[in-house]
Length: 157
Image 1 (spheres, rainbow, N blue to C red):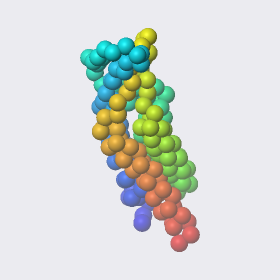
Image 2 (image 1 turned 90 degrees about the vertical axis):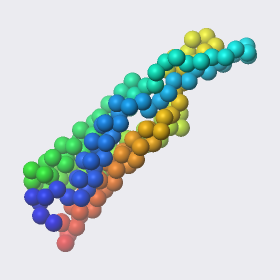
Image 3 (image 1 turned 120 degrees about the vertical axis):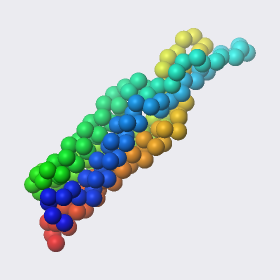
């Protein structure tokens, strides 16, 4: 495969990064109010859901970094930057993709708590869009892995 055309890994990670970036503006969590006291009263939430930017704090910065690095790596491959830089890019894309997946799985298992006021706790309830975003993060990691595999083949074969 020539260096002038983007490799399959860069295409996969680049498209996955674009999808993840778009999905970060959708609601990943609904807001669920929970009564933690022994009193019997109903609590209803009138709050809107929260996007990745609003709900995840510093994790959203890691996701944005993974998106940025993936897009930059894909663009550099499209314009045909040399082989030495592509290996570094693939390692960065793969590592940030794996980190993003791990952090998102953590937040699926342990949704964020938005506030606690007395007996009322506001917790995040996972929305389906987060699962699609998780698939996009897996795509970033897979794209980095494919790039590393292609780089290994071009160096040894």
